[in-house]
Length: 187
Image (cartoon, rainbow, N blue to C red; front, side, top):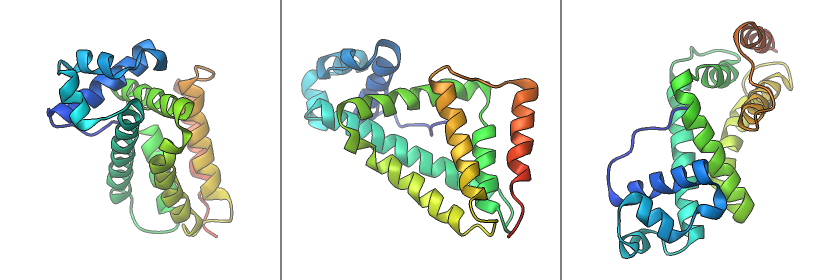
């Protein structure tokens, strides 16, 4: 889940700074003043874009949701048409994460947790992306429940990684990948 490159404008510098703060120092360290300092902008410059901590978190989540949507659509575009196309894209998206991209995924998780902790409704843009994918999976031409099981398994693996509970490697990754692909039997 590599986030898309961002322009080096003030708004994105502030969002990048806020993400770094949340990931490395935790939600309590995220203040408007800290984000301005980390971004190298004046507090007035930050306030021009984000009037409150909630607005800053909203900006982080909205940008993240946009990146997720772009990433998924890019992966989906590479998957051949046919039954299970969306489920194959979900698998490719999850298992296509390279070591260099793990930090981006962990930063995403930090943003999710920060938003959920302070203002759970801020996750709505990400929830909408997940619902769009689930809706596509419901009509993916597979036996009932199989495509949704793939998404649930990939989401579970992501969350297990985020919380450091289970980080499969090597043979385990290969076995999980193969097992999920085996679920993609057409209806």
